[in-house]
Length: 231
Ligand code: URA
Image (cartoon, rainbow, N blue to C red):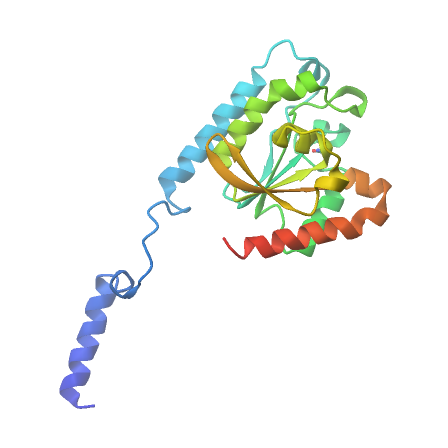
């Protein structure tokens, strides 16, 4: 290459780098809603705080009256994966975070197996206060907290929702099916005008009691790992 052409090329490269040459050469559309956009991030944080405040203002609720703490969420609000459990247990009530007890430790191990952790998933529950004696939340309680859960999903905008156990499945899918029939397949759901892929799997507390069922939850986890490659 002659010295002249070399010089021209060097100048051109310098020019392109100054004007961000990727914008010229890239055939991809520009994502104007970049996840790292500080304004969108700020909105999300603000909206989550507003939602948390609203839940903390709930009145005449037996769950709240008996609980020590509001258990809102854990994890990364910008995650593609949102995990929904049933409701806080004793440990969660004490610490104020979901899935911190034995079931939570198992959940962490399950996530780790598909390279996920609390830095790249977002975790919440159907109800945000611990049901007394660790009972299941009643239908009425689930209905009362459902609008908050839907708002939570709307703010996070996950690509994938993992519903753990029958309470989460029944609340979101509005069905009375059994997990064993519903798990292991994708369901496209619409929440507050958002289309989201959801998958149902066994609750980790159930897996602690029935470890032979772990082989099925492994299948579900691998489906999530595969699906995530699309996003
Ligand atoms: N079980 C749940 O469903 N959620 C928790 O946060 C803890 C245990």
